[in-house]
Length: 487
Image (tube, rainbow, N blue to C red; front, side):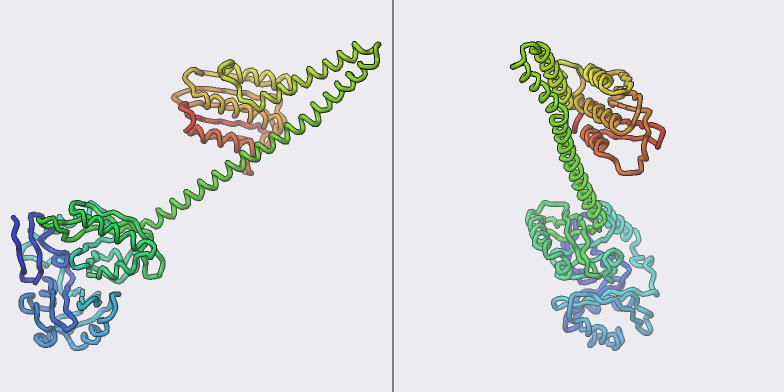
């Protein structure tokens, strides 16, 4: 049914459609009494609850002067409170008692433009009694109202009359969340706009204008900062359902404002933690590079430089001493071969193994053999389920580097005489465990650069690192990596 009604008994201009909720404003559903007058006290609006509480029907009072026609409806004491609120948009929250009718509770009065609005409650009338003449219709309207609300959120509910440029703040959400003493009452749009953060206001209003001009948008969604009564700004998320008449003209919106300050702070904290983590990784990379250069420099200066110096001396002697020439050249050749071997050893540490020539398992075994030849330690390597043809090349290099890094840690710090390397592929995961019988450590203390590098490689492969150790009881490193390789 579509029926155009210019005015009803409550003096509301509205257009009824086949949507039940559009047939009534929120002020006709709530238990609060509510009325509006202009700055000459002419009554512009009077809801059903006001009819019951005050005892005057809307048809008898609409368009008439409140004080001239109904001097006994309100006590004169109310005039001073009323009159004090003809300036400013910020509603007041007062409690006032009105003689024979009984106490008015939660009185809210404010003025905007040429209109003064009053919202109030009374403990003499139960909300269960309102619209008792049509309980089925009332229940239907309430169900439809809350169906619309369920589509959005339930933090700070509101109805926004676009044409009249005013909000109806429902159920005290804005009081609970932002501190405004406004419950089931109108606030002008200008008041809401004044609470938008200056840096967000232009964007929010421009977005609103854009959406309303389209004539087909159903949902309004936006984030902005909203001022609270204590002066701080909350990060909020608005989501509303836009309601149109049959001519596709915007009537109003029903929606909710959600305080997302905690989420925003958590997001900011997460970003800071990620940046800090990235900083740690970058510093670890630079420090590793610096340490590597220092080690190469020491190797060149302390070892290779000395060997080459000795070889050069033997060559100089061979030039002038015929009798010892053969022996000197043999010695020089021997020293040069040592230099070649040392350079090969350094190169193996520096350059990732070429998996085209050696498989991952072969490269690990070669590293184990080379380590045992050059250090007093017994190493055992076991592998299960390794199928290298299905493994990402970068993942293979990362596995090799993690083992190399941990063996270097063992040799430098543990004093171990034996270590075991287990490499397993199972259920889409690479599981690497390296244990030694060294002196162990207190895992609660700060981690070293080597473990940090291992963790960085594990994170690149969507993996994790677990360390178990106690002083005097050896050390166990467990690394789990995704078989799909790096992110």
